[in-house]
Image (cartoon, rainbow over all chains, first blue to last red):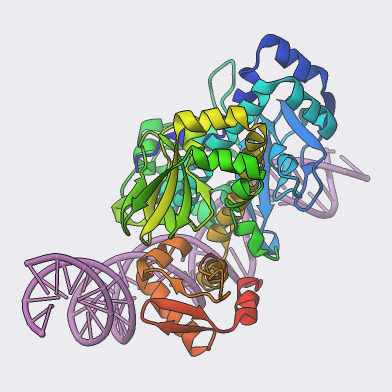
Length: 230
Length: 230
DNA sequence: TTGTAAATGTAACAATAATCACATAATTAA
DNA sequence: TTAATTATGTGATTATTGTTACATTTACAA
């Protein structure tokens, strides 16, 4: 199981970017701009879906609240990502929650408009099918990693994934800006265990830490750790 | 997080059963019957998808091979379930493998025929979208359970799920017939740890064990364990 | 700016589950 | 049927990770 980081990416930006210029415009015309301040909920478990979302600025986490407030974070959405369509499409309440990690500018397309778009743009239906099929594979990989990889390898692997999620489009430099709590909830461990490991990684000069910000110094070595056969 | 077992079911039988009689016939007409002996691979990781599958008789597991042969099993498909369409629909190699747990009779619809069906039966496209949306929620729940629930609760929960998967359609009685290895690979633990827990469950009169077969004796109590807030 | 609350770091300790080593039982193939 | 292989059970030991308790730092709001 040599892990390709691609197999952990939802690629939720591909839906919109694959539309023709005209279809894309049609899509954007149906949207309404919303602002979510850092920490605000975009949607929440057991809530009834009312539409889909497209991030213009900022990042948001999707997660599931476990017992005693220990959340499980599945993914970090960023600029360009379309999300929130699963629960809408299967007519079920949300299974997960979404919270803004930073101040976010989000385009919202309501249920009715989205259905109209699905009718008007047949290609959109196909793109959704393709994307959800891909997501299935990603989640399957996530399960295997969380269930089988030891903590150290999981951390290395998710740092690589987050490196992409926090990459600046212009400078191509990444600074992972997450609370320790959130990072622990991504790799599925306790905050304290994460802290110990981060200290190790720092001492091994794999990462640089400045306050809460993590910058990757040695990508190759992290890849080797992420893929080691324990 | 009170867990509804429904939220762990793929409901892969709903796709075909939701089609009209005519569409269903059309679908079945495109199929070719295949026999897979117990232990045979239906498809495998990194293989190129060539079609979709529908189980008529028997059960099959989908899983991902981890490191050192420790597999992670995601689901047990049974009679009526349609599967194997994810990789086909996103044009990617299989992310997981599928193996017959018993002698299986499986209907196979090849890629070309399946695409024809998707064109001919618009409702099929919608049903796939709905089902994959639902599956997303299931996988998200699976991740949370594997990452957060202690072993004992995980075992209780999965026994309940398997109780449905191994329910006889006629007698409404279930006998879970899996190797200890497979069961361990479902709940994400070592074979030995599973064995010890099964012994506990047996002593607590929650289950009855006869050879490899597990029969649930006290469903209510298992539900309580599965949902306990550790 | 400054006080307050929230987030993070750290060390000792505990618990859970994995691993190892081997006995025993159950299948399977000759 | 019987030998051989595979699956399962069991106890001792170890490793990993979680928990607890508290110090320290950082962020935020008045």
